[in-house]
Amino acid sequence: MNFQQVAFESAAGKASQLPASNLPEIVFSGKSNVGKSSLLNKLVNRKSLARVSATPGKTATINFFRLSDCRLVDLPGYGYAKVSQAEKKRWAELVEGYFAQERNIRLVIQLLDLRHAPTEDDRGMVEFLLENEIPFVAVCTKADKLNKTQRTAQIAYYQELFSETDIQVLPFSSQTGEGVPELQALIASACLPPEEDLQP
Image 1 (cartoon, one colour):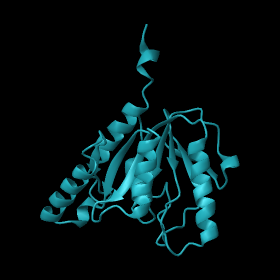
Image 2 (tube, helix red, strand yellow):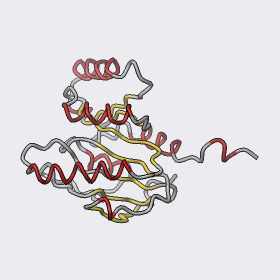
Image 3 (cartoon, helix red, strand yellow):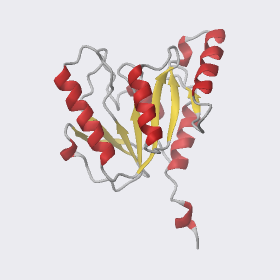
């Protein structure tokens, strides 16, 4: 899969605007300011495919990016306190509307800040994914912001957090590129046709 052959496709502010799900979809989820746009840009080696905002909570749409073999789906960041209740409600309805549709979701990249414990919103999203048996990987961002001791402790913390599941924990840094090859490999694998389709 060529991650550099990517283009912005569309943005949906309402569930009724969501495009047809005619490709495997890789979904990116996380709280505001967790580094989602930076991760997306690093993943495809672009500086500004996804807009990085200094103001958390700016992304109010679900943005779709097209690769040759799949579609990258950037959900709006959650949990930003300064956003109005009406806007939070609209975002929730938009994201719930996305997951309620019959979509070809192959993998959710659930972003968590390695420096901190999961927020209440993070935990709610993880529980939703587990309850609905949606495959996901826990990508722990900002790995470069910790010293060696802190980093070891936090990785162990997150691994323990997911120890009763088969969820993979992947440290990531958009600054150093740590985790990029592993994440690209996970996405490429998730987009392969189901095994039954490969039978002669």
